[in-house]
Length: 119
Image 1 (cartoon, rainbow, N blue to C red):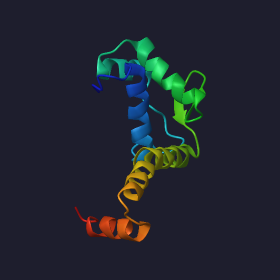
Image 2 (image 1 turned 180 degrees about the vertical axis):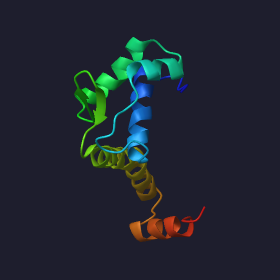
Image 3 (image 1 turned 120 degrees about the vertical axis):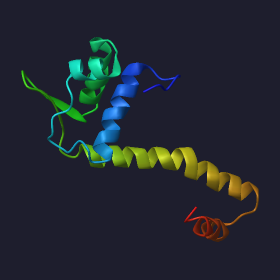
Image 4 (image 1 turned 180 degrees about the horizontal axis):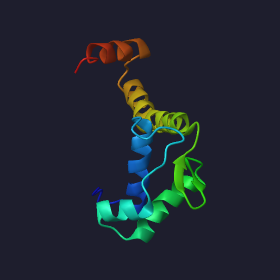
């Protein structure tokens, strides 16, 4: 955890999201507590709580009063869909636009991607 330009609470939220996407945090499983996250990452518990609460606000986690926070059903699919959309906007759209500027058609672009498939 040391993404210089990102606030710590966002980094905490992304760590939890990554764990959900890679399957190490299953749906309906309990996530580490604010105090556990704060101790492990050596940050203020309020910062860890802000990261978790951002995920609650986003519908990725939910609170069970007195027990802790848990991954919502469908959270993994929601995160993957969001990341796929972001991937398309960040990488695919600019790639296609640049290819068009260079006179590279979609079929040629697909062929280029196919040849780099195992890189």
